[in-house]
Amino acid sequence: MLYYQRGRVVNLNNKTIVLIAFYNTKALGVRYLENALLSAGYDVRVVFFKAYNSLKPKYPTELELKLLYDFIKDAKPLFIGSSVMVSAYQEVVRKLNADIRKLAPMVWGGVYATLFPEKCLEFSDYVIRAEGEETVIELAAALSAGTSPNDIKNLAYKDGDGKVIINPIRPMLTDLDKFGIPRIGEGEKYYIDNDTIVKTDPQISAFSYEMSASRGCPFHCTYCCSVNIMRVNKGGGTYVRFRSVDNVIEELKQAKRKMKKLVVVHFWDEIFSDDPAWVDEFVKRYKAEINLPFEIWCHPLKTDPDTIRKLRKAGLYKAVMGIQSGSTAIRKDAFHRPESNDDILKSSRVLADCRVPQVIYDLMVRHEFETPETMRETYELTQKIARPFELQMHGLDYLPGSDIIPIAIERGLITEEEVNRRMEAPMSEQFEKHWTADKRALSGREEINFWYDLTYITQFEGLYKKAAQLAEKGYSPEARAKLDKLVKNGQRRFKARYWKNKAAIILKGYPA
Ligand code: B12
Ligand code: SF4
Image (cartoon, rainbow, N blue to C red; front, side, top):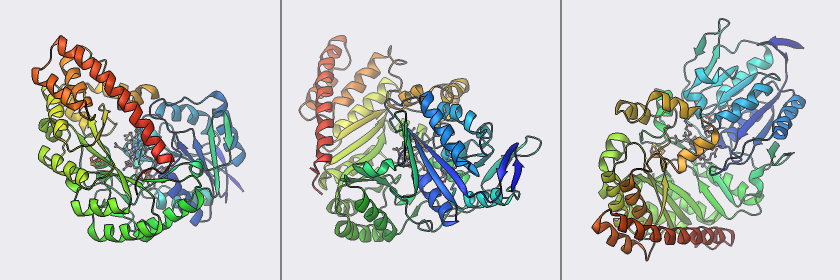
């Protein structure tokens, strides 16, 4: 039986749903939605549209767009679900959306859709905000039965007059195990890239398995959207939640069973658990049943020595910690990060004492808040950090919806027009902003660049003392010339280290 829904013919009782992940072949959110819809009896087809490459994201070719269009045309889905996590690839999503939206109702979800439902409704028929599992089942049931979805919680849509209606948010999931474990290499999964469509799960041939043992983060950094997602869910229960260890281990066992090349596990938890009881159970079972090197994200205020020691014994080989700036003013007033320089140094000592083989500190530098003084403070902090360590130096992204935007506007550092322009900017520019930031914008600001380069050098054994000698005398054209040589040397070491680490992963060289 057919009926008309928003100008399209919809087949009642249609059980086929297409979910699309953009530039993300892991797509945890989509895999959880797949499970939820399968558990409710739908036939789900997942399309991974192009690989993730944040350094050089590739634009889709006309053929790839056509492959997606033809795939959806053949599937005749009840609706198309697009996972719109980030603003960065909006340009691509909007382009392909224009054609495929003619084929079936379009539903957008993910972090970007959660924060900008009005904007997303210009391109979609429905937006599902916040966690999607329960809502997507209810929406599918309503569309397939031909009943009104208008009262479904978390849903946003336009009414008959074109007015945007944003429904209240339901409580967050309390039981993260409820929808099972993300499926690898099972079900209807398709991968579009390099001008082909292949029925495969790209995850299956990867060296690393990426997963999350929790949802939510207890911190409120202004450059991150976590706090904004927390606000959307306000009143809906505890934001930071953990899966059971049993459920996590079950997922990892599946990965070990199915991924023949698997050598390493990445936990994408915003901050890996430091709950003593959870960690105790986790390390015991992980060591006994998984026993693979693993990587985590951690925080200076959540680096308990006992926890790190236990994780290290269970296989922790890489810890990435955001410190962002050595300037207390930037960290506290602009970024709303509560830790002191002393906390950072203490936590670095913990990681070094526990002999975590690879420790990486994330810095967000050379942005509009930066002055020569704040960049110098970052240099001074990194000189004191316990060695060995690596630095990952980013710019500041002004992620749409994040709290840093009004702060920067209020201080006159950026205009609203510029923020809006960046949000709509081509994908290549948005990704570049993330990594290389304001190199060119700051090209006249030699001193910032001087302290930036000295900071970069602090991560290299054998070079950091030379950086200290240059720093002592401060900036001068002569010091700059010497520093240029040091930077070239550092870049060579950086490349060598990169390949050594990569080879170590492939050859299982990391001590587990
Ligand atoms: C892990 C992670 C990554 C990982 C892996 C992603 C993955 N496995 O899917 C990696 C490192 C690859 C990554 C890359 C990037 N990320 Co990221 N990432 C995250 C993080 C920390 C967790 C995402 C996650 O897996 N959550 C768990 C799953 C279960 O939740 P979920 O994805 O949100 O999905 C749920 C709902 O959103 C919804 N939903 C999702 N999709 C859909 C689709 C439909 C149809 C429906 C109905 C519902 C729905 O239902 C899902 C289940 O409840 C988030 C922060 C966060 N709290 O979300 C940032 C985050 C999403 N990333 C962010 C950014 C900026 C990026 C990059 C652009 C960074 C860069 N420059 O390279 C890239 C872009 C990658 C891409 N192609 O999307 C920003 C986006 C902010 C914004 N306003 O744009 C966030 C919010 C972090 C931040 N700094 O604020 N990321
Ligand atoms: S600690 Fe990390 S995930 Fe948490 S709010 Fe800060 S940047 Fe976001």
